[in-house]
Length: 382
Ligand code: MN3
Image 1 (tube, rainbow, N blue to C red):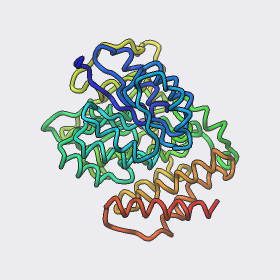
Image 2: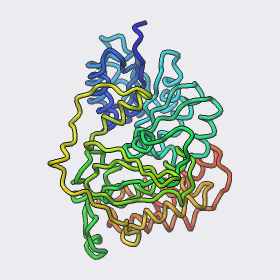
Image 3: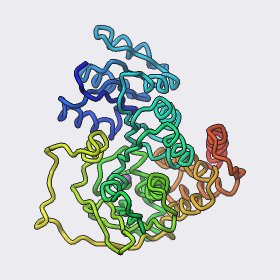
């Protein structure tokens, strides 16, 4: 026992996972990477495991098991494969914090396992709250597990909160994505290459496309509702292209608190690990004399329909956000594969919302069933 907090990183080869490992390395006397997992990125997982020497790794795609096991055979690292193994490793008694940083619906089951095992959750996988916010919040309360937001906006809001003082409004900032100034006509012709050149944040492909459609912001509205217990009307999206203000909270006396910083995900990741303390870190500081104007705009939900659809899904509740998430995962992937145009993404989501039967209950079984049916239907539209 060395007193370090042991962290299981679900999705260690992705953008958040990689940056989390940088944080763990910089704060090496406080944290250690105890479990690393990847879906398909074997080479990166092997390289990370050889460098960080976790107790265990999981490769979710079982087809890669032999390759990973053989590459780590000379080290005392347990190697597991399969999605069930993801749910098991987070229950290990030695794990203190689970960083849920995998992409999409796949993050839901392991996160539920971690909550039931009483682990502190650092939540980067927003789809978990989008699909199953009510269930996750209920379980977290039941098992008395803290859920610490890693998404930069939600970390900002969390940092602005005042115990005992009610939130009047959350002002959720949004970069606007790479197509903020494009006309509807121009949006017909954009490609993934345009979208992947995101102006401010350095992120994975799925979330970068979600940022371009504003689906990401829609998901963040749903995420904020569940994390902070506010109604949809209390969440206002504000386009702020410079991404210096990471979000704001307005209190009942009209006071507004904001959290500012350079766009660097390592700060919210580190804060989720160290909360309520702040740790000294070498991240870039804002130079206010070099900061250009900070500007604010109303989001255009006509050009960026996904944001409006997220509010509809949130108001409807039940399995509706799950439908939106599943249809979006299919449409997002089809756009990345050059199979559909940009504007088709929101159309596929909207058609799925109209077609898949509504279910008011919020059980895991309903979500699994809805997810499966929606994917099949959305795929048929491509
Ligand atoms: Mn965000």
